[in-house]
Length: 254
Length: 250
Image (cartoon, rainbow over all chains, first blue to last red):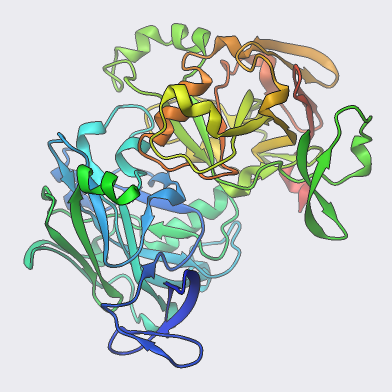
C-alpha cells in the first residue's frame, strides 16, 4: 500500500496512491498524479544523516564518521511532490541530496538492532537540499544550510515497509532536467537503518511519523532556477521538484 | 493574562490564568506551555562567548560564528511544570539551562527587526537541559534531545504585561538554594534580532518557541537525580521540576 496526503478543497487529506501514482480519495475519486496538490506524507521529528555514504564523505573531503552524524530540521523546511524550491540570490553552490527516508511506525525507546526493523512503518524519498555558502563550523551542518523554507521535498507517498523487500539494496538516482547526475545504492550506507534506530532510540523516544533521512551518496551538482530535479529511490518513489529564483519565491508569498 | 495547558480528565486543555489570583501549583498537572517547534540559540551569552574567544579561532571552528548558532529541542524533550527531568541511568552529569523563551503569536516569514516583536505573543521560562557542552562543532542531538530535557512553562505571559523583556533577572535554585543568577541583558543577540534572523529563512508559526540563550554550564547549574531545580524570571514566574533517575521512571 502507498499512502500520501494532498490538499483537497483546502484541507489536508489522507489518500492512497494507485499503480499509476494517482491519488485516490476515501470515496474512490481519483486525482491524477500531475493534478494533485501533494503535501509531505507525514509529521514528526526530522532526523538527517550527514556523511553516511563513504564515497560522499570522501567527495566532501571528510572521512566517514565513527558514530552517526545526525542533525535535525524544522517542519518549515518540508515540501511535497511537484513543488518549487527557491535558490537564494547570489549563492555559489546549492545542491540536491537524494535520500531514502525511513519512517517510524510505532513508539520506539531503547530498541535493539535485532528488533529495529519492526519499528519501521514505511519508506519515502527525500531531497535534502543544501546551500554550501552558508556552512559554518558550529553545529555543522547548521540550520541556515539545511532547514530553510522549501529546501526539503519529501514524498510523494509512503510505501509500507512490508512492500519493500530489502531497503538496504535500493538504487538512488538524481536527474537534472532528465540527465542522470547522481547514482548510488543503499547497500553502501555506513550506518544502516537498524543501527540508526538503535542509536536514536537510545537517546530519545521515537514516535510514529518520525523521519530518518538516511544520507546521500556521491554525485552532487549545482542547481539553478528553471531546473527540474528528480530524486528517485528504486521501489519507493520518484520525487519531482523545480528550482525557482528568490524573486519568484518572494512574489509567490504575496 | 497568562496562558497554559493542563491535563484535565486526561485531555490537554488550554487555560487562561489571571495573574492577580494566587495559583495553587501542585493541584494541576501542567503540560508544556507551548506546542510548536522549539528552536534554541547557542553561544548567545556574553560571558560564554568571551570564554570561547580563543577556541572560536582554532580548529575545528577556525572562525568565530558569523550568525546565531541554532539548534532544535525535539518534541520528546518538552515537559511542563512539575514533571520529572530524567537523569541518565549511568550518572552522567547534566546541566540546567535557564532562559527566557520567546513565544510566537503569528506566522512570521522574513520579518524585520523593527517589526519582529509584533509577531510575538509573549514569553515563558525554559530550562534547556543538556549533557555537558563539550563541543559546538557538530549538532548536539545526543546532548540536548533526551526525553524530558526541556521544561517549558508554567505559562506564557502576554507580551503587553512584560515591560522590559531584555532586562529581566533570571535565578536558578537547586534544592531551594539560589545557585546561579543571570539576566536577559546578557544576551549577545537581542530578542528582535533573534526573531528576525530565524524568520529570514525559516517560517515561524504561532506557538513556536525560541530559547533565547543559556549561560555557561558551570558546576552551579549541574543537576543530579534527587535534585529539584527551579528557574525564576522576574515577571514570568517560576518553573520547577524534580530530577529523577531515568531507571526509576520506567
